Image (cartoon, rainbow, N blue to C red):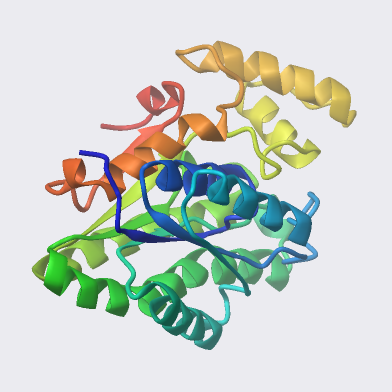
Length: 290
């Protein structure tokens, strides 16, 4: 039921983290994979190193090692015309698009009363508008393919912080709440074409997005403690907080443990699943509302 042979999957944010793990898992399930990433600096508000062209190439090598075809496209998902050009290129190269995993996003922290315009707009533009751009760009080809096959999949990445507030994380939280609303609306509209639309809800994943001082401090404060400002010490404090908080006792989840959910949602086994949120959080979702 998870056989994706003959399918073409587009993965945004493919250079590393969840995007790379999902690209590999989709390829192992039989899909040819198109990776999209900016593979470079995104915003000056970020307290982490940008993805690199070398990391993006490494994803390609991982996919090609499975025997599946790979196409890398470097672009900024804030650029809708570039995404539409990419969709045309994918169809010309592979003949169709069956699956979109709109995963790319950024995260930064700033108290609301200290925010500059860029703190708000860059996260809204990359995460929410960028995800919508990906859907607008690739869904027409998925619709055309679904008319022939009855199979079309759109998966978007939200967050546990798209289901609750986040101290100093209002912009990020707002984007991830918005992505859930976008997903549910798209599910209502795309169902007539046989396209399912769902949201992945990752917990605290072991990626560059979470392994830096700002994110450690946020996790520590959520646990009722105070960060020290020393990144090495705060990493250990955050680890202790997350192990205590998470029912399965893990501080960070390996991206490889998230990828199978993407494959499931892309597969025929999930043909009746649409409009839903699917969590991989080590049990942290138990702290949320029903």
